[in-house]
Structure formats: structure tokens, C-alpha cells
Image (cartoon, rainbow, N blue to C red; front, side, top):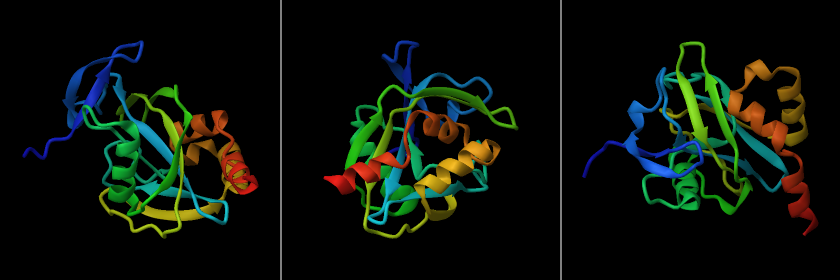
Length: 182
């Protein structure tokens, strides 16, 4: 069994056109590929934010959403969300819901590394406390969703560009409020 992780390459219309090693698609000429982001809430209505490990090639040490990842070829996105929740933050998540199915972004970090992804965004819930994988996450905090939203608006430079863009399109406070009402 190979330890090489593969990502799904996409054309401009979001159709699968092949695969490539993950290590080859995060550089200065990054091909469009499939990824996902997930925002995890606890029963107190707090959202989990994480600070990327300092060893990460792109945006090291930057605060971001709960976790992100890439589905393996032929892996359903919800399965990838569950897999990465366990791998990055040691969580079992439930009620995984697609919140932004067509989220897409391209961003360049200070070192010139490009992220170029079609990146559906999910919301999920947990009763657990995170157990961080230090290769992925330097630290994590449960924060009030309204406070996170205010922080992103006032200091967007302190967060990953994908989180900033997602927050503009996703009401970070609403998922938990809707859930408590049901």
C-alpha cells in the first residue's frame, strides 16, 4: 500500500479530469482540485477554530476553520469529512451538512504557494474535545460564533483566506441557532 496521498483534479466546470499526488498540487502553479472545509460546533453553540501547524507549507500558523482536507479519488465527500475530523482534530462528528456546495477560491500565501480549490463547505457537530494532530494543527479553541464573525470582519489578515471568504458567504451563527430551534 502506498503512503502517497492523491487529490482529484478538476476542470474549470468542476468535472473530474484525473488525479495527482497531493504534494504536487500545492505550489506556485497549483492545478484546480477538489477539497472541502468543515466548521464544527459544540452543544454550547461554540465553533472550533484551529491554528495551522507551523510545519504546513501554505499559511503556517494561521487561524482557520475547524479542519480542511481533500477527498481521495472515489471517496465520497462526507466520508472524507469524517476521516479528516479524526485525523486532524481527533473528533467524531455528527449531523454533517453541506452548507456551501459551490465554494471555490484561489489564494496565494506570502511564500508564493497557491491554493486553487473547489471546496464544498460543511457544518458538523460534536460532543467531544479535540485531540490535535501536531502535524496538522498547532492549537484549537472553542469560540463564540458571533465573536469569530466580528474578529474576521475586523482583522481578516489574521485568518486563512478561505475562512474569510467562507464567513462572507456562511452565517457562522445561524447553524447552531437553527439546530437549537428544532
